[in-house]
Each structure stands twice: as C-alpha cells, then as structure tokens.
Amino acid sequence: MKSVQVLLLFLITTLPTSAQGVFSNQTNAALQKVIEDYPNRFKNIKGDLLQEHSGYADYRSKVQIPGSLNCVISHGSQPEPLNWTCSLFVSSDHEKAKQKYQELYDQISNTIIRIKGQKPFILNGTYIAPDQENKATATLFQMTPAPECIQSLRVEIHLRYREDWEVLLIVNDQPNY
Picture (tube, one colour):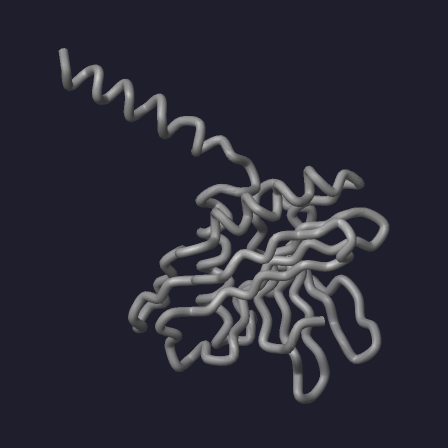
C-alpha cells in the first residue's frame, strides 16, 4: 500500500511539469539539437529560405520549440555571422512577459548538453531581472566546460520591447545586438 501511495505522489508532482507548454523539457531538447548542429553552421536544421535582406538570408528552422511563434536561422555575408532565434512569447503586458522570461531562464539554467563525441557541459547564466524602464534585458549563458568545437557559441535569452514585449531564445556566434 505504501508503494502505491509513493507512486501516486510521484505522478501527482510530475504531471504538472510535463504540461508547461513552451517552457518544458521540449525547450531543452530543441536547444540541444541547435547546439549540436552549430559546428555544421546549422546546415542540418536549416529549412526553406524566408527572405534575403541587407547581406543576410533568413531560413525557417527545422528545429522548432513546440508553442513558439517562430524559429529562424540567419546567415550573414563574410565574415558570416550566424544566428538561431526563436520567438517564444509576445505580449503587451510587461509582467506576463517578465514571468515568461523568468520561466525560460529557470528552464535553461544548469541544463546539461551532450554533443556526440564531446564531454557534456552545463549552461550557466546569472539571471538579469527585467525592468520595465529598460526596453531590453538579456541573460548570457556560459558553457562549463565548453567543448572546443563551440568555443564561439553564445546562448542568450532576451526580453525586449518593440511594439510589444517579446521573449527570445538566441543561439549565435556574434556579439549582442
């Protein structure tokens, strides 16, 4: 009887975490696939061409986070900056966007990433609390220890305001924009 109670308690506590939508283990699984393909310049996850503009080409990403608004790969001309950007949440309500930003941080922080043929590493970042007065907030994650093949890789989350507040997950090899 006691083992049945323990099993029920386990199921009750784990079921709500599997229904978190965008911010779930599916986020980490997608992030894992993106990071794994970074040494290939995202060629295995690059889908159809969406548009070309100002020396950049945007492609639909074959890796999508379920519930995300869109995930796009951008390639630039020489020296060829590279970005995978996933828009996860948009709202005119700063508090809701701030909450989603915090949830995304909590989901990604201390994630273990495994690339075939490399030692696993952990994503660590210091949370930067968004402020409504600031129109952009970003948290950069370090890879500890970072494999040689992804030394220039950056994983970031952003909360920015344009027409609405938007939460983004970005994997790139260029400085903040």
